[in-house]
Length: 392
Image (cartoon, rainbow, N blue to C red; front, side, top):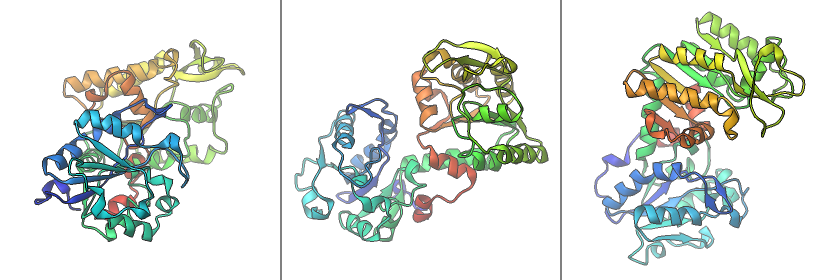
């Protein structure tokens, strides 16, 4: 893989820069700017090199149709303030754009193409679409690790038509994840949360041989509690999980990996309720499990205390309601405590986990925070990511 940071003579070159600026919007207002902040290094690097930057990105799932609620305009305005640069957003049909007209105004060093997913060809990985995009630039740079598990036109096929390089953020993401998968300091602990155990079974099974502890929290843990014969009331749960969970425990036994799950829980009658702490056998039929309990928190803190590496993907509870954010808060606090003493290497990944850390102003207190969700998990599972393979 070649890296853009090692390249000379980028002056006046048009760089087709694939970014992931899929930020959460509410009424066209950006709720979380983490992904924008993460791409500032590549923007500043290319500005310093006096390159012309043509940005491709997406927001949401417009399904190949123009949706004005999913325009990149708020991102452009945000980035203008952060870079002190005038940014142009091209809204006209991509097929009508000509290379020589993009930077006609010499004041524009950064130009955005409108949401690339407004074109169905993007998600269809259409080679002719890739070829057309390539005609607009001199060099392609992928700095969207979080999109690199997608075989999309602006991520994979594009590399067939332009000299292609990895960006600064993509390199940083891969280096951090390699530390967890190949340069591990033991004992290693993985905290896995979220709602579906089926989406993370590959991750859990792949990490069992490498990790000492796997802690399963969030709605995923409800499946294990039910499997162990505990009542879970009206809590979120997947069906037909018995074989999956059998497999997890059997694999863990073979590799002497400890699988941990809640010993007590915080419940409410609905998502807006106040938290009531209950033993597992006390959960009633109309209860919803929404967080881990104090005994479980203490156990997790003890495991983190003895760990040298911690990987965290997925919240411990329904943190959107502060009454059910204690599990997330205490886990974050313990990791930060160890981090500040340089006693642990910590990585957090996935949108919900980042939301937790942002809420607690703790993003900078981890060794690395990945903006990727699916790509983060698939890389750790050992899968080959199409976007990375295309650069190799």
